[in-house]
Length: 296
Image (cartoon, rainbow, N blue to C red; front, side):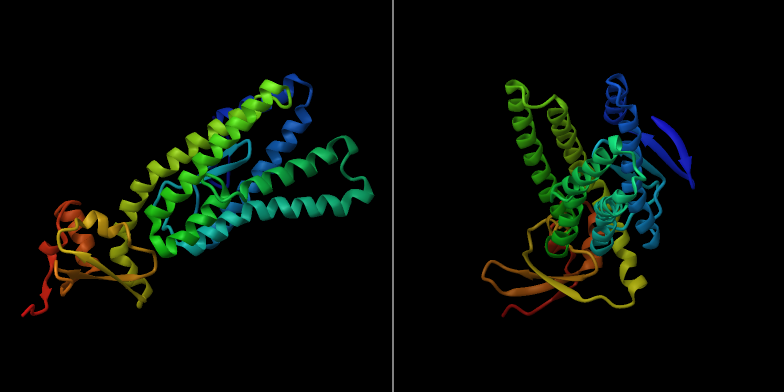
């Protein structure tokens, strides 16, 4: 549900966040709900500010109980370094708010009834988001790091899988806690949301990756020079398996090997990407070779 717009960015409340605010209101803790709203908003605003510094403006912010999701109507280049910096901005903001609250504690600026909640909420949101699992900020940091060695698509799959494992563990722990009377249903609900969001991140990875491959055509032109990355593959391997190994900010040369282990030719990154889009994802690598080494 959209609740407003700031600087051209739509502010959207996730249904789980709305439910949480209603529960806090019904139980007489509406001020705590408003504090939580403010903390989550500042957490996500930090992401958008850093993203803008990298030239990646967002069009909307969806507020969640443990953070938020910023999205854009345009293409977002999955630059690993930029993604790490943008992801860390949220938890670092929570850490700053914690330090600010501790510094102001002697002056009683924040009422005592709200101070402890403000401090605890910032610590929980900040630390929870540092867990290296999608859709959390720590998962985006992990994806940015892994993308340098295994490519965006596989890095997303790895981080999303960890997110699902985390969700299952949280769900089991939360369910046991509810059964034993140690906690409310909030933890199982959070686990469900993390699981669903991790699955969505994994599904979206394919869409983003295809757009990223299209962007690869311009990457060399924009940077002027790129370091090379070599891959070795058999000629019957389809191009869809080759592009999975492409990593950002590298230009790839694929060496083609025959059954006896001899290098018989190579294909450039652009030839592989063009084949991916123009001839189909199952096109064998050997059909796009333009250069061949003598085999005899």
